[in-house]
Length: 73
Image (cartoon, rainbow, N blue to C red; front, top):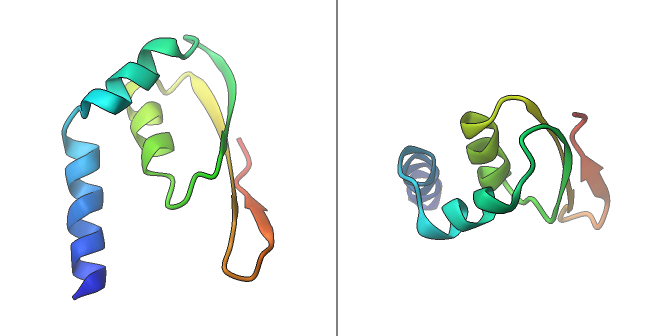
């Protein structure tokens, strides 16, 4: 049940322009590399890339095992 709710939430976030995401998007450059520290499931990163594929994003987060994981640009 929890996983179903998480998937619904992800689809909702990626399908609608949420005001807080639009505000963040307005501050970003048109190209370059961005580090998303504390990216979690990377919903914001995915949204940014869907709006501007010219950007390169590196997502970093601390996992349950207290290890830092990063996705390459």
